[in-house]
Image 1 (spheres, rainbow, N blue to C red):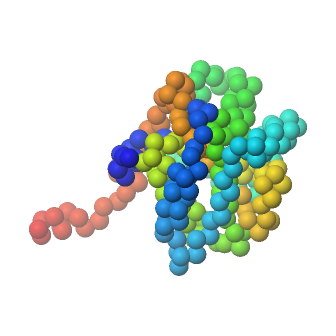
Image 2: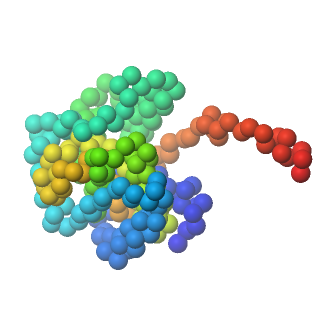
Image 3: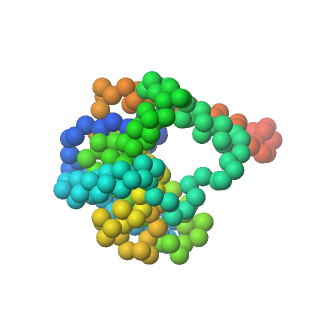
Length: 231
């Protein structure tokens, strides 16, 4: 297994998977370790539904039927992005989309091609395991952050074990169909999905690397210069 730093550096959103199954024991080990993710006052507000095999096939069939009438999915239970997303965040979102579609040769004017690629979200990009991540709908913003911490922990643990992931907010837009297929109680809000499996090394899309802003764009260091001189 790779170390934490290596997992952070090598992790990426994978959008093409091999059909090889994920051993249940490996998934259970990752899930058990992810339970150690920190949460405010140890509330552990997440509830995860992991699906594979025939139940996954049934879920994807139901989703295809829904998508036939609603290609963009169902109204999500929460706003995934701010309605008036400002820069630099909106610029980053646009650049990410252009990098992705440009990498796979789908031009901006090719609306059908972009819609077809978006629809691959609802097949978990061919991954043999899909996870639906939910949160108790009575929780507040602080607990939503806890779910984000769980997500990061889970994905890095998977990367450490040679598995790949893609966190997918798109599944929030199939909440009614998913809830019905997996018998998810209404008390849980469907937050996102995660595709889990072994990356297809031959898939062009998996060679994509999205850059990050330098630390200076996100972090303000205060008082460290004086502290360094004191030492």
